Length: 512
Ligand code: UN1
Image (cartoon, protein in one colour):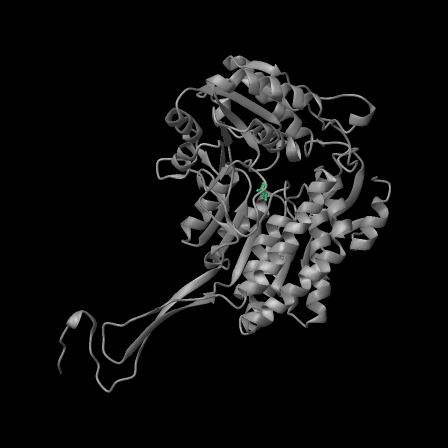
């Protein structure tokens, strides 16, 4: 299935060697180091990218500043129309882009296509939103005064995204930011640069057809240093960063020092509670997809199962049976359920985590191992593992970006919720129950402390219509649907006096 990769790259306009910086469709020559994007699927070199250097970065940021002056004056629905056309263009390229994402990142083809579908969906959402950037009107306490609020674009939005959703997370930010009147500079993960280049080309064709200033969509491919530069750069009023908690703390600190705004969407350590009232025909597939989907490399992946005593042995047995049916291999082959990890560094982290689990006293239910053999020649394939652990192990409180599932027991629902909350991260959570008292407690103020709390569905696979993000070390930011758009705009309160007097608020008298 990956044999047609040359054709896929060609149809998306990705060359053998690509500059790593662009202002719309203008690709900038750079003198940065040259990197090769290797596929974790089969270890092949796909294409090369020259990383953005300082001069290219400056040009992209400068073009964004220029572009903002005209883009912000376009009516929001006109900006929405451009985003609508991007959605149409993405539909045309869904198959090729989905395959490239799958081949470059290693997720299953279904998930690669699903990711492009998320991009299409967020474009549709943003088009409607472009006519709904509502502010409130308030009644003034002063006679013949009108008071209302309006939302203006913030300006340059820096988007830092991770390898695991190499295209969708960018689109959640960019599509919303654009209808809000902002301009974007994107620093994708240097582990998935080609998927980013393909997106830049898709957008550019629409921009050119609509005479949009190319600076509205900037791209700088680089390492953490470029991300840090953006975080320090006062020309970006807003930085939206998705990735590890370690990265988010560095970005948050830098942006905070200059009192800029951030949207941080960082690590998760997502648990599913399986109660004595769970329907296991839903719970088991939900847990398995959550734990092994994307090879455990979603920030929403299920990492912990908190299981009622009375169900514990049965759940374990059914998990072992389900894991026994998983086929691991080329993610573009639709018969496989689990693809590779992103690279060998990730494999090392997986191995280190397994050592740590055992050192802390964890017991294998299904022991993890790195897979070898012809079809695993890239060295990036690992076996999805399950370990019995105690809730307070250090490794259990840490997000390992790999298919490792921890199982543990509880006896009361209050205890289960406390266990679910007893980690530093707060992204996603789920309860499997048919009992209304349990599910309502889980969703109450005394329940899950996460940004996402689900009943009878897994922890991953959120829809774009809701606000996406989480609390605590997950960073507190919200992207995508609901009113997440407000973070991309600045609020202005306006009071207008249409009388011939100058009454003061709070009844203050000031007479000359
Ligand atoms: C991420 O892993 O950074 O809910 C995003 C999900 C996806 C998004 C995950 N819609 O699993």
